[in-house]
Image 1 (tube, rainbow, N blue to C red):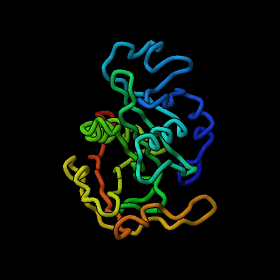
Image 2: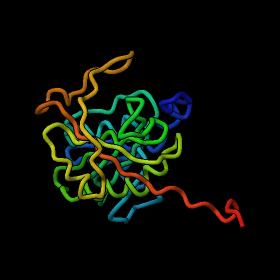
Image 3: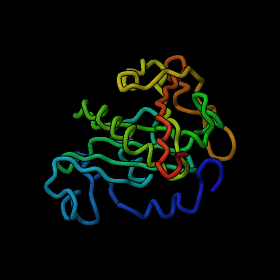
Length: 216
């Protein structure tokens, strides 16, 4: 595994799990041959269903939900989750290691970056639900290293109230990634408003020492 979380666990094994994808104009999710979660032991009659998805499946949802940055294309460590209500995909979150070596004052191997979050256009309230679920339950389960903080970016021209009202702290502003190395192209954010993104951070409390590690 390299500094960005690239490993054998990364694409090959993750992309073979939970084959969920968009079907038709209603953005329904499917398992092979069935509408999701129909035919699945979990969530068949549940109004809400939450599950990991592959990068390809997440990107189908990002396109279907018209995320302004489009698909997630970073080739290093990532995880993605989809949320469905009554069998219909309503939200997706994709998170990964940061592009830069540092973000919001933290080193790359101390943070996880919420790179994409998007929702179905007919479910405006679900975005805050997805963000809170991700912040409290998914980001701390980042596979590649323990995280001290989560970071995300409000796009140029946006106030970042989604993060502010969820308890995140504004950590500064930055120009979007302009591309470099062998994998990336200039960010679409360069063409939005003034091209300046706002960095938000949510810091996690340090772990409480167990009794066995405390001195008498």
